[in-house]
Amino acid sequence: MKKPLIAGVCIVVIAVSVYMAWPRRGRITPQMMQQPRVCEACGDRHGGPTEPIVTVCPTCGKRASVRSRSFVCRKCGERFEAYRERLADESLTAVDPDKPPVLVYKRPGGQWQRSVRALGPLKCPKCGSTDVGAPMPK
Image (cartoon, rainbow, N blue to C red; front, side):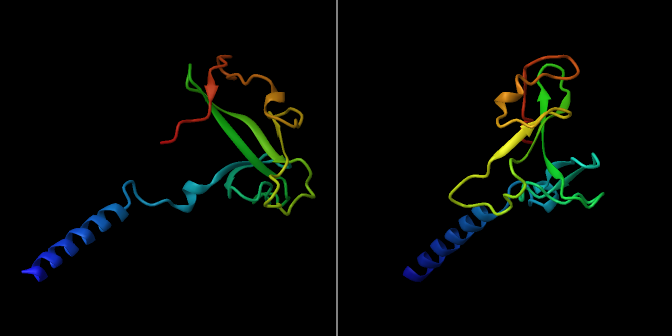
């Protein structure tokens, strides 16, 4: 009597484990993990790894590809490049795990600033609305 009960409990535990481990929305592909980037040397837009912060451009081969952050206007729906980010000092290639890297930010065509707040309020280039923010995850 105990063996069939134990076997039944084991089958239920295995079924629940498989259900909990099964991916719900599919698998994450390397393309999904791409960070939008812009080459400061040639202007090429491409995807790249999230780390390191500055990478080599696949088009021109220069180490000038920086992260690009896109925002969406919540009023008109326009998607635009809000700002770029890179290391404050290019010699800081080794990231110390005890200290976060010092980043600088700029709007396209602007000057590098020490904080995102120094860029001023971000506005939609199409309608001028300040109701902008990061795109919602899909």
